[in-house]
Every structure is written in C-alpha cells, then in structure tokens.
Amino acid sequence: MGMNGEILVRDNPAENRFEAEIEGHLAVAQYVLTPGGIIFTHTEVPAELGGRGIATKLVEAGLASARQRRLSVIPRCSVFARYMQKHPETADLLQPDIRATLGI
Image 1 (cartoon, rainbow, N blue to C red):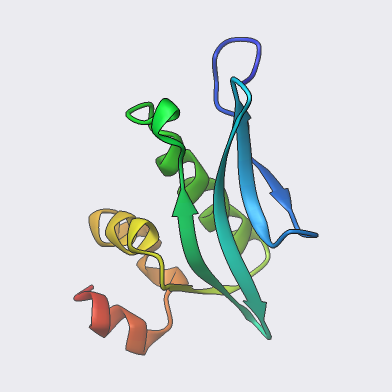
Image 2: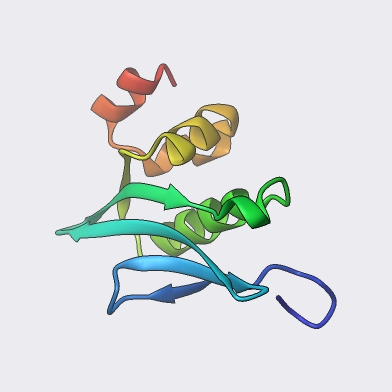
C-alpha cells in the first residue's frame, strides 16, 4: 500500500499478472497477451484482504494498461466481466463479439 493508504498495483510481465502486495498478502489479476489483445483469466484476492476494493483496483489497472497499449480486452475472468458490464465506458476495449456475449 502507498503512504496514504492507497492500493498500489503493478504489472509483473514476467509472471503475466497485475499484482498488489498488502500486509504480506499478494492479490493478483492474471492475463495472457495475444497479438493486439489481452485476455484476463483469473483474479484472486486473499480472504484476509476482502472487502477493501482490491479486486476493483486490479481490474482498473489492467484496463488502463490495455487502453494505454491499445490492446483489445477479452474478460475470461468473471471479476473483469462484471466490472466491464457495470462500467459501459470500458466497452470500447472489448472486441465486438465479446460485447454481445456480455450484453453490452
């Protein structure tokens, strides 16, 4: 965590994941890079860290990175899929067939 309690998320490309280390616990959002895209496959937050919005921060960091790198997003992870359904401003990151699948 940052000095003012903010959740710091970093990309760890060697492990193909975004991660946040908090109080000795590691929360992760795993991904697979494809040509022109990124598939988010799994998000995991230890039970000890639940209810703090950490999964949301991982998703936001992953989507911001995808936008910056001009990658299309395939949310195979339910955490990413639910977030994107609730935040239509992220729909432009999705491939058109994925938008239809998510009902966006």
